[in-house]
Image (cartoon, rainbow, N blue to C red; front, top):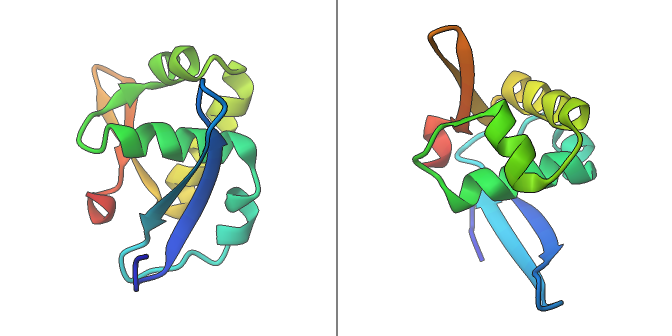
Length: 104
């Protein structure tokens, strides 16, 4: 178990097994941690990005990969970006998202 503050995510894989994932929050605990920790869409986005920590994804790819509603994913991405948990990069005016450098 990490000694630094962490965000704990729970999900169920395709076999029905319950899995718990912990993401360390390097030296910072956002004031709104409890807000997005309880939001299932934010949890899904964080879990997806944690599985691919050094990869940048467009919003469309994240929506497709998570098989989720575009508006919910957009809201989660904006919230997580504003809170500093993930980073937004622009390439040819298209936003891409990844875990923040502190999370690598």
